[in-house]
Length: 350
Image (tube, rainbow, N blue to C red; front, side, top):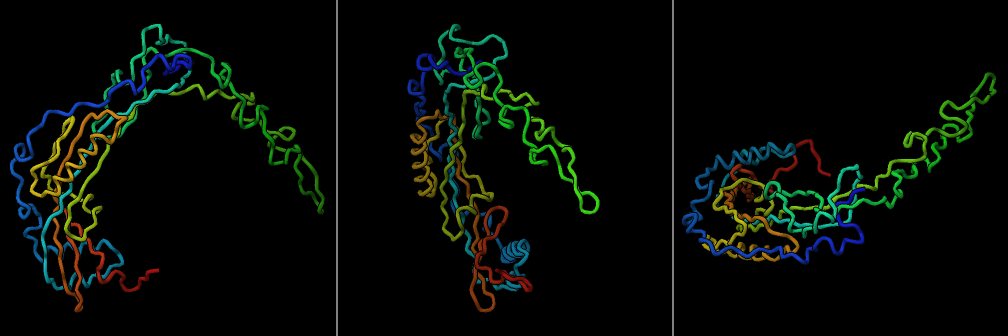
């Protein structure tokens, strides 16, 4: 069979290891800051999609939210009295680092008789010297290829070069015990007046059935003679959310917002002039973290962005009690964990 890695007696001397290769890249020269490339960021108060949200619009969002929950009562949404609506926005910073990891291993594939690319064709390249085009950026993927000049032909250790191994279904006998007759070859049948008699089993010959897995030969094709060397592209994503309300961070991640800033380069520099200093700090910390977090990978590309998600926190009164809900995202999603009527008439909560 043909291998896609050095033969065992050549593995240490044929191809270079990852330790021989510097997979890091020097950082690019300092780039322009945020405000120089994008213009001065808009003020926080002007970014909210809900800046002009009315009570009726907030009520409509809540009514739609209730309609999507079959056991929620409609009365609070329809009859509530608003006491206040506070409008703000949440900031979502996302950093993605797209990297590539490589490894080599002694693997095998069936030999088809074609010429092989062995050590006689030259020295094997080191893992990071092999050219390989990545797939779509920022999408995880795996790819296998043969290291040039490392193939050799040898007998398969598992089947000793025969290409066949003992059938595991019949233990090499070509037949299996018949369970219909309990391996006796005969089946008891009832006759007239309570009598009985024995007939030959329809399913077997003498208590054993033919093994269809090996076609009664007792041997199967050897499956061990296969394998590859691998490349893996990984996309590392981390984020930071600045949110001044009780809205859970996971809700912010799932809705649409305004794209205040987006940048993609082989190496990105931290945002340093965003009007929310906490976002600048988060950007600096995450970019620094990603610069050393993946020592076994070559960073191919990075991108980061800031999304601004509109948020409106509505307070209301219903039956002399105070409640609130949050309308968020460009889709006007609703978060109402304390909605007062979560079980309508006829339903019970166990």
